[in-house]
Image (cartoon, rainbow, N blue to C red; front, top):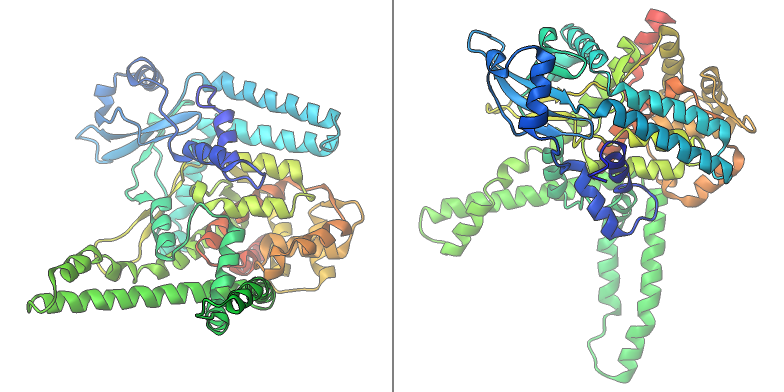
Length: 544
């Protein structure tokens, strides 16, 4: 896949997190393609000549310095950090260069996908009309990544909108890079450098603080959360059935109680998932972990104080020194919830207010389990379209940065980069989407939600009102425990199936899907509809 590059690297990235039954050994190998895509283009023979040809001058005449080692590499290009000449006040920049062979390789790869879909149609695996529609949208979005001129225009437009004091960017401390048009071509984009580390690094640290294995699926996270709630009751039951005896009768009794105990645990866990909300399960885990961190922090402080009086063993002092960061870590757990709400708020503004948004707001492979799970539960709705659009979601390790201030009490800054996959919505499309979102946010009836969905042009086999309403809530509402129940989805799929899914909604849906995936991985369960409610109202007021 690495040698083939392009779409095949993306395919490996998708296979690393797909809901399909991929063997774990293969899945682990595919995961390396998420953040360890090698730079296979040589600086001296390929990258530097390309930059000088595109910019029309030797690099020494433009830059004070440029790092030959890329700060990021993707399937169609790579980025280098550079410093402009001393007399240029703009300082540090990022230079993004497209691989010379991408212009022909990407279209060729897309054609291969088209031929594969034709085979699927021929063998009856997918619907011909649905696959044709999905393939056209997939090809359009993928080819748009090659258009650096359009990406530069998108980035400029979003950057300029971020300067509006009424927009959420400044209020939420969200920044975007400024493009320098005189240093941009159809193969090169030069933009201001944004400090900070990748969002994925900080998020993985937050997940580890919560005791969450980032390699596990969203379903496993929720199941473990519900299991944690039952741990106390289970512990009491174990004490009751444990028998300290070596007699045959005691051993027989222990064996006889083992299986019922397992059945009891499974049944109770299932009941907890169905009765207790996902939000409650997540809050219990976060609260318990916060208490543990604060307790450990207090212990660290006590040991450090006592060590100054030489009344604690040396080993205790060493242990406390190793856990010094726990004091700060326990105070940053709230940051993740603020960050998730900020990202949803900004993207809701871009979609409903500006009509120009980044349709690919991803972090990394570790936080895409929810989209894969979501794809699995709505596979009868828009299978080919959703699958192909998900391929577009895994082309870089992450396009969100976070920069924590050195001064206490200040909010972290979030940087949004990479606007190659932007979607433009007309005012009419924004109003229709806004009405659907508002209907879900205000918990309207099935009939009201279904009507709003139909105005967007969705077509289903039976035109079921219940199906459309549940599907809409699943897209933009709060995730519920019943959504983990396979029988619920089975009944929904029996009710109806999608024949046509509106293209203008597919990219909005994917954006919400990726951001919800991030939130759920961090054990937050937001309602996209509720968070976008004000933006929806504003869109209706302006254009409705």
